[in-house]
Structures are given as C-alpha cells and as structure tokens.
Image 1 (tube, rainbow, N blue to C red):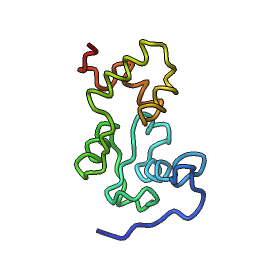
Image 2: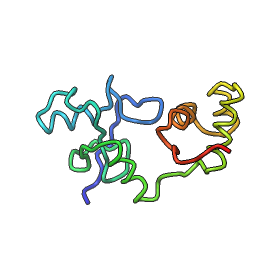
Image 3: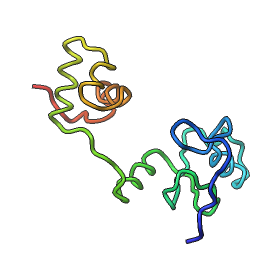
Image 4: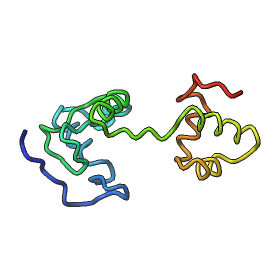
Length: 128
C-alpha cells in the first residue's frame, strides 16, 4: 500500500482534517467529480485507518453501515454496552433521569443513550 499523505492544516477538535468540512470529504467529492452535497448521508472510509490521511487512493465512499462493518472487521469497534447495561439505561429513563445523567452513570455518550432509548440500537433487549 502507498504511504499516507497526512493533512497538516486545520485539525478539528476530534483530530480530523478540517476546512469547514472534513477535508477528505471535499477531496473525495472533487476526485469523483461530484458536488459536496452529493456525499450527504455517505461516509468516507479510510483503507489505511488513518483519520489524517488525505491520499485519495486510501479513501472510498460508503454508508454508515459500511463504516461500522469495516471498523468491526478490523477489531476497532469497542463494545461498550451489554444487555444488562441497556436494561439499566431503560430503567433509569423510566425513573426520570436525564439522558446526560444516564450517560454519565453508564460511561457512554448521551447520543448512545438516545439511540438505545429510541430503539435504534439494542432494540431486542427487553426490560423486565
């Protein structure tokens, strides 16, 4: 594999190349001859797994599902939730705790709590 071309300009708070949009989104849209908004709803996957890489040969367009499968297949997906934690999250919600408070207690992000409570993830777990 070719070496990575690392972005050395603006970096976002989470360590990603940034120029008002993620730089690799702009580069990939340009490379594919598409307007930037054509990438809405799509994600840019890195074959090299280096978030600072802007080598167009290391970038490909995919869905969020593609990105999660890629992450899982490479052993980068951390499984933070268990069935027991999901049941606990739902119990805390039923008892009136705010999602932010639940997230702090369980040690996950508020967005993950929200996803669980909306049934977008872990919908198969029943609360007893």
